[in-house]
Image 1 (cartoon, rainbow, N blue to C red):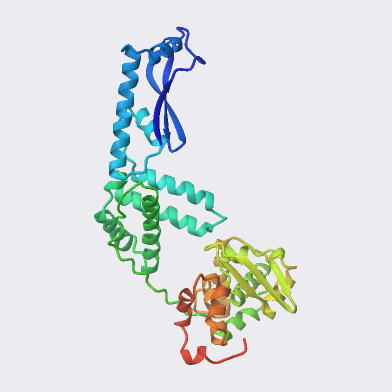
Image 2 (image 1 turned 120 degrees about the vertical axis):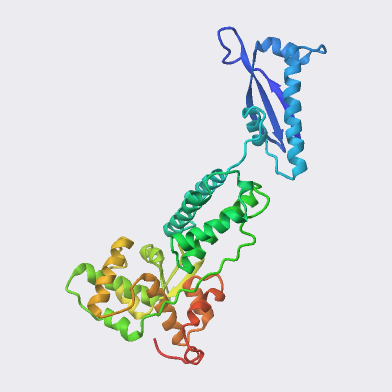
Length: 374
């Protein structure tokens, strides 16, 4: 359904009793309006629009209708989705098509992820999208989004790899996020081809060597004599026994802890993926929760990582301590203890076991298949 109509409201006329003609566009039951430049007397407009004789008002409206009809037909022929708001915007722009630019696409996408931040995507993921967009703007600048091509993407990739010196895994993250923005653009009819389609994104593997059980116990049993370090120690040990990421660690609340007989477990959605994880708590994790009355002493991620460096130095650990390392350590120890990969995948909050295979690669199959108490 498509229609164009005109009105001239009596309300808000000027001192000469004149008002702008208003055009209304209806597309599939959705209406949108725009004011035209011509001012007329509302009563004269009503007479002119219903008159069988040609007059300057009816001719003006007919010309406006013709331009809107032509633009509507052009959009339909191109296969572009036509909305009522698109047609009235065309009128407001002086009957000229305004190119939807790369920055327009980024602004629209940012508006969406701002709404999803904290609910569907974590703060870290949100920040990475903004960084990917910032660097794309630096390399490509602003241009009609349909003009962004494979060369622009290759230049972006070159900039990330050779000028910013990003590692393969970080490079892949930037490219993947930038590509998803263009996928969004295609799904919303902002462009007809994704310039990333011919680009192969090689996800470089990060060689994270997990802590051994001896190294983990060395940290867990160490009394640092400083409250802040002891608290960070407890957070790290808790993460290394639960495989929780930092954002999930920080979101643990008393009400998330449930019991089933003698089993105490956490059931929540991962902050990063939104996938529900079910996490049975072992004695170490339960003991730490009880120590803090089920409210973990969360600090900022920056301070947390800074204090972990102190802990590593004091304990003689050569590996860089992070919650990511703690997560790897927990997953590895679980697999090493003979826990089925399907179970570990559910605990990690992975959407499929293929994601969990990354942890399994760290172990010899004969070790994975050996049941060891953990």
